[in-house]
Amino acid sequence: MLQTRFTDMFGLAHPVMSAPMALHSGGTLAAAVSAAGGLGCFGGTHPWKGPDWIRAEIATVRATTDRPLAVGFITPFLPFTEPLFDATLEERPDVVALSFADPQPWLARAKAAEPG
Image (tube, rainbow, N blue to C red; front, side):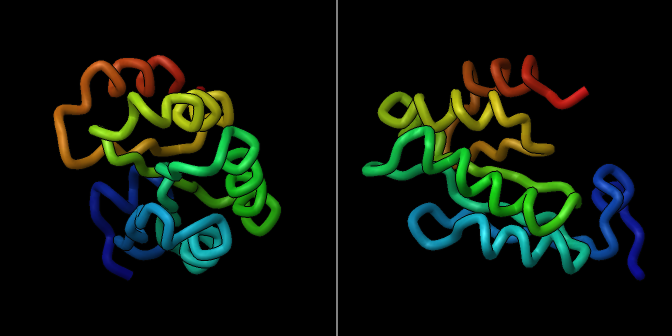
């Protein structure tokens, strides 16, 4: 097993994180990656789904494994999908990934909701 800061930080067996592919990944894929020893992640950006969808995807992961999980967002789209971001923070995943633009002010909100 390759041990890195990343594996140590999340208690992973493998230094792998699945990509948060919006509209192409979900809780089932994230659960499989987490259960296999990586950091499972799914894309939380979805133009047609609401907060119940994100809660259900997170519940799918948690019903499969107690290993860490992540939810990723396309940062420039967050103003249009903020309810999904809010629901994610309420569910307190281990990681919230922000990509493709300056993560502020979203990063500060995610840090404030870190799991204890």
